[in-house]
Length: 215
Image (cartoon, rainbow, N blue to C red; front, side, top):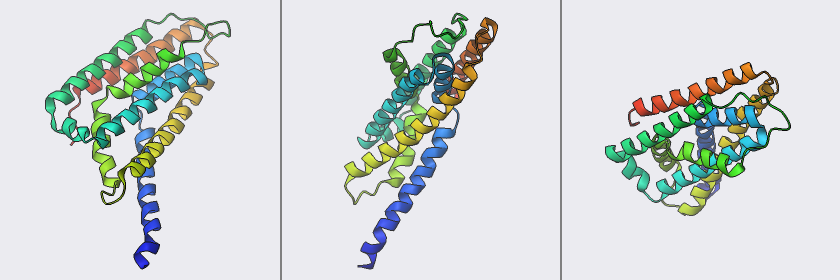
């Protein structure tokens, strides 16, 4: 009877621990923060939200991979990790080049809104082609899953926690960039902004390509 009374407290403590880990993961700057800020600064929050939702869709795919046990396979396979790492790095560098070469068009209400599907897909690919994210989730999530309890409910709670925290943090990055973007009416400033974020994407790709598999 005493164990039954204490179970909810243990469950809450475990969830709070996972929540803290999720927040730390989300606030750590990475490609997701870069795409959220660059899109928010140039196109506004609602356009950035589409890219952010793409990031969350990729997180759900990562969790599904871990739930199916494939995350452990990727963590153990040097060749699979290397292949996905190179694809992810190449995609980030390509995004950086596109951003660097983007025309210096002043922010104006008459500029047509970018297509939401394209931004959503960018968000998906940025997170999906990051093998370190999959391996990190594969190392983190099982520590908070009780094998003696139903798995589906636990993974649903983990998915909701990861996505909610990442959505909130990425929205914070995007909204901060939106306020900065309101000042970008000078083509020279916009060109500088394009090259700044282009450089960040290229740097993120280079760092990913040079990184080793996390242990």
